Length: 448
Image 1 (cartoon, rainbow, N blue to C red):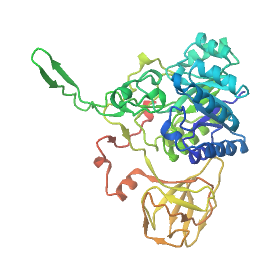
Image 2: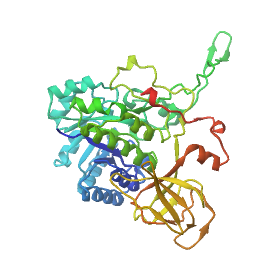
Image 3: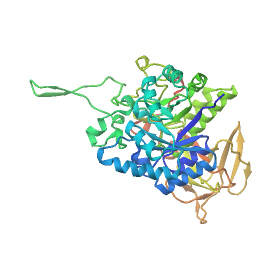
Image 4: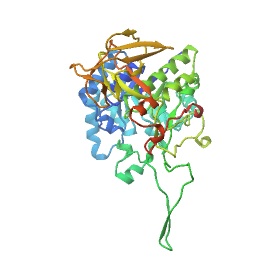
């Protein structure tokens, strides 16, 4: 059986490496030039991006380069130059969004496969055939597509690869074709600078021109005013159905602007879901427990299994984001010898160790700390917090750039975390005292 690919976001070099270490078969990203994620793209320059491609290729993994914005006439020569520069780095595919750029990429880099961006809104075999005839190897289907439509496309064009989104932020507009950000801030979503205006709370007014009177409309209690805020996609519980269909070649995680923790934990959860399906031991509760550790806007299984008109759970109108069940305390460096603080940590604290896929850890007990195992999970208790320069701390705070010595070498990019209630308590907060745009952690498993 052909095994589906797991594709994860690479917002910068560190997140690229984390995604690969936590189980991705391939990553996607690029520099800010002509990418739909300008902010994350600025964290890559050509030199660091080339390093990322080399890192992936050394491990038998792939990198897909994003050139998926829509060009102005004045930018066409710039597009040519940029694609030519990317081609020199030998990425495994170019992700583009328009027929013209497909043709341009085929001309400049004929040996590099073309993947068609979800921005092209392909949902049927007729459109898929057009792009396939242009030389597109893979189509990243519209997020509104159904699994039945994927099956229909594959039955007509069996050699065309299909990629679908399975996790991450959803746009309230159809496949991201939004003008709200351009209207309010002049930032154009389909050219990479979306301001996420749909995530804001809004007040609604009614104006009577005859009396020149404006009334503020009172919203129904407990409903909220985040009227355009879409929940996050979470298809982990349906990975078995997706893979059993046999028509999906790649499962894609959204999130180039999200945290290193998100890149690692979400990738690992879907890695296990895919591998467990092929091993015949699929367990959706296990994957959802891990996905619930991340910050999210509430979860929905979106439209792949159910048609859009059948859904009534895709919006979170009362809040824009909610805590996950856990908070990152620290991230181990690439060499595995030190860690950097991401949340206040003190001598005596005990944190959970989250390992990259396939990694192991030795149980340890020394002057710096203790690592033990309880019910299949590893825990680290700090006895000393000492930097590589010899500075000692009773507590170390988020944002401190000191590299802290570990009691024993751990796998590179190991994550240290604690439960959210403990993390908030250390800040003198509770879930009831969270900011207005936040909502306390909920278990989302029932929704999906």
